[in-house]
Image 1 (tube, rainbow, N blue to C red):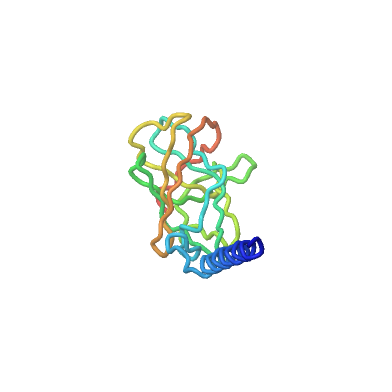
Image 2 (cartoon, helix red, strand yellow):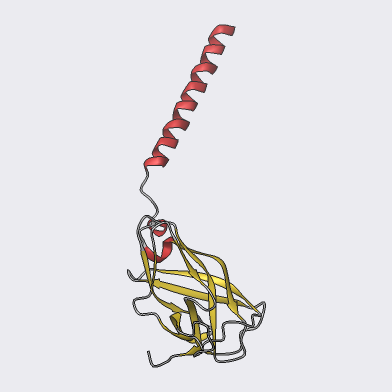
Length: 176
């Protein structure tokens, strides 16, 4: 009696293990979630160490490092935020030392290209996200939502925290 009971438990255990393993195999071959598809432009992006400059003026910048986790380049072409009437992708040009003209910000033609598997640094004095026509001051400690749009029309949302920062005082070249 004991040996047939052991055999039944053994067969049941092997059957359960086979079902478990076949379930794992099916999960590995299942189609990826379309919302998580790395080829979906903006959805492949993350923002590391993101922050916004606190401002009581009419514009401010957003900084951090965009990281592309996909195997395809992602071109960011637009940005927006509910705290601003306008959002632009900016570059800073000119004013390279020597007491010459002050650096100027302007909209970056063609947007930002975040290379496949790469990073794109957004920093004061360099490329950055610009929030213009602020609806109210952006205070230190405030959460600032930002939406980026890729060339393929996909979007990704981030929330950054505003902090006090005395730099990033370039002038805006609105004629661009």
